Length: 232
Image 1 (cartoon, rainbow, N blue to C red):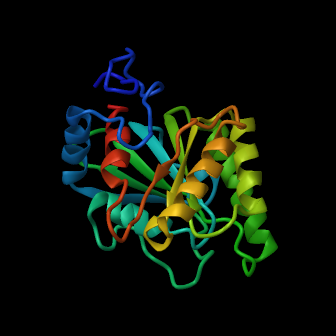
Image 2 (cartoon, one colour):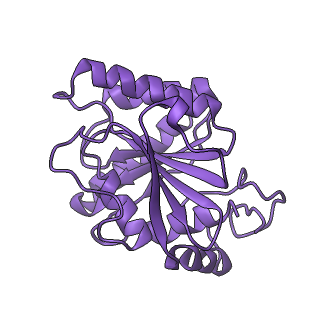
């Protein structure tokens, strides 16, 4: 599938580098490609707690990162249409490994990264997670994009800023995604979107468009699916 600029105009390539992730910019063909991709089966196939335990690079990987309790598992479940693809933990900070999910109809692998920044998580776990994250980001040749999730209801946390800096240093292209938008009033949500869009433009590895989502209502899921389908 060719890359597209705003308005659905092809820009060439085939690696997704020029895909725009702003809501409303995807053509009907792109949206349909995303629907078909995620209408297929998606299945967990591997978990890794250290760099030497990673599966061999295969296919195109897109990773999801975010602060603990940002709604990452819920977003993955809503994205894939599965109720329990990713476990929604009642104990934030519990996930301490990279979880890999294979799409059935295309060589796309979704990677669920460990949550960060939860106050009750032991410091050693935080250090282990950061080390694994950096190793993965810097050494994974088939990693195309990281989706960094931010809670639309609360202020940006220092841990979020640290992770953005790490992503910049790793030269990994990433997309900021607001979660839980259904729980924010329209005016406040617009302010948050403007704030995070301005923030993205300050970071060299961040795409300058923010995607707004809700796992509860499905807001933004079609655009997120289309953006991932663009890597095929």
